Length: 301
Image (cartoon, rainbow, N blue to C red; front, side):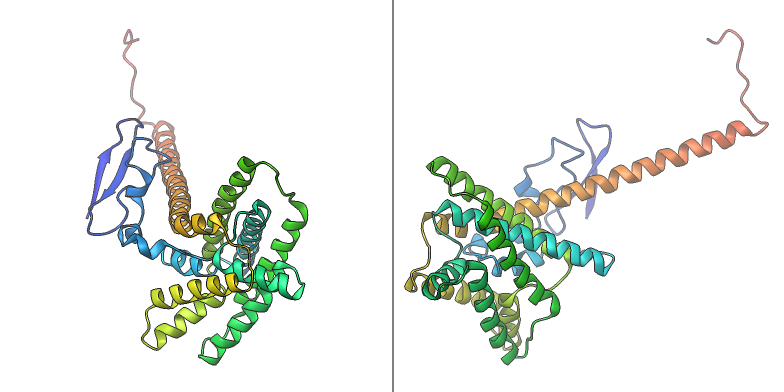
């Protein structure tokens, strides 16, 4: 049930919805006095917070995908969004690498493999993804071209960004790298979801589990915990940032998603109002172009 209420600051109306469905408020861009962002997030945020804990960069895609049903209008836009999002994710991983405070679960294992056999982190990510893709294919969920491209671009971006970024010496800067890495990761994941393309191997394995009656959440936790434990055993880079990332990645994805959604909603409303004003101007011009012009009364001004 949608209600319309007047915005106490802006000269416009704001949409509300009750708790039975839909966002509570939609356009914080246009109405600055709306409720806090957390209260305006989709229903996913009102589930048990345990659903949002411990997301790796691959499993986070499946959570973010439930938030958006939009699809870009063309393959070119899809490819561009996938490339941009994959690049952002790679930069985020590189920021966490250079911070030297620990990596996300999947990358803890990738770093262990990287150190163990002497390859780059991006290449280790490719090797792990290839093995997981093979397992998913055996369970009837082969990767798509989009999924392979996503993994490939991730690896390229990780290695390229790692070659550019310098390790900070100050602990404060290292903490800022961690915070920036988590934010950029959330932004990149949302951009990939906006592309409407398929993601990495975790999504395929979660779908394969669901095909066999196993919930996606159970499969996700098995994968995330499994790669983290194996990564620690293989000597991967884990630390306080691993815990911080696991605790706040899911919530950050939702905050970034809602901010982007608010911006899109605000832009849509602004365009609608602009069209209404334009139509009104055209109608006024047509009226004054006719012979039935209203007569001005002398002395009325």
